[in-house]
Image (cartoon, rainbow, N blue to C red):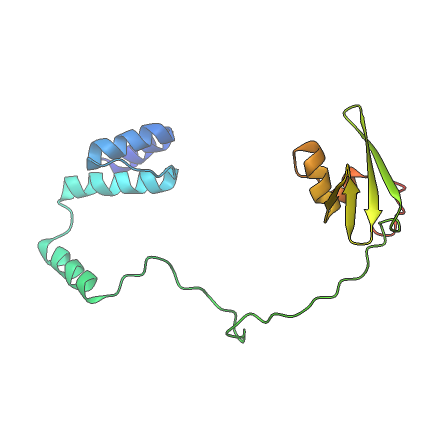
Length: 164
């Protein structure tokens, strides 16, 4: 077997072709769509078929190692050096949002030929008799897709006063 020639052939194959080749060589289907993984596995199988694979001694040793070790199904989580054992929970006070007009104000937006009018409440937004906790939730209810609520109502960036 000419390894360089096999590598060239495999590199020219599409992923579905590689998956088919893998199934032909191993007798197993694969769910992998990772090109380099498939190429490496196919090459290993071809070389093992050509040169005989692992020796009986190597296979026995692999079985011994597998039998004597605990197998993890998921990798351990890596903690940052000096990080506490538990996540600390506390209250985060955020500055007031100065893009919103005061409670009682009406936000108006034209959307697909319809005029959307929303009343700003002290804690939320009233639209058609329903109260929403955020402008983004309200915009999603109106459009059916996620929007940044400030962008949807053209309220601009912090400090812009909506003059974009």
